[in-house]
Length: 274
Image 1 (spheres, rainbow, N blue to C red):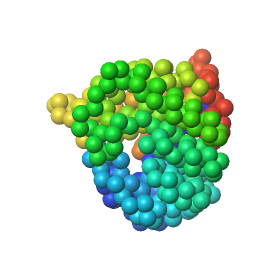
Image 2 (image 1 turned 90 degrees about the vertical axis):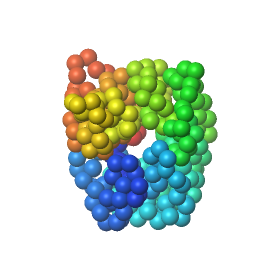
Image 3 (image 1 turned 30 degrees about the vertical axis):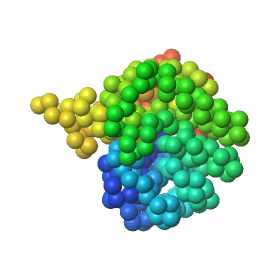
């Protein structure tokens, strides 16, 4: 069984990669269908940018952006909602989303009430402040402990499908991000399936620069995005969140078909997610 691929669908004017491209609900739904046709197992719809320095969006505006798109896609592909607001999560779940992708790691009660899945992500601070001066004594241990506590609380509270995400790029330096990828086994060995999102993120521009040494721009980060997604999948991540779905699905098939691979401890969670 190959790792799952979550396709990114931002219905925002200011997301770092595709902001402004899918503000029209019809265009957004069409892109969601294209992601599904390219092999996305889940389409992740977000109405508020979480890029470094982003400012919050009122809940009513976020609901206006995401609900029509979720309602249009829900009968065709599994849909998750990327939000930090309880009222947005509830509206999205009512519209047909079945997974809450939660960078605040706080919305498990909404997921439990709806019988939906929930992703707990680690973030230090808020999108507006998270990259000002991120510091840890032991980033891997601290992230693992935070996620285990959040996931345990959700499971105890009735969420049947719980995922954890180390939050690459969310309140972390490039060195922190690489340390988390290098030691991903410490998350994978626990009882919860792991989701990893590195796609097109800023740190990749520095660690995989252009031949002349200048940082790779957002549009030139596909090789590094694929490399880190494959790295995560080989380390045992059960799902990766990406912009470039077709290429990542090809990589996921290779990872899933490699000799000696087993489904591992989270195979049941993968089946639930599909």
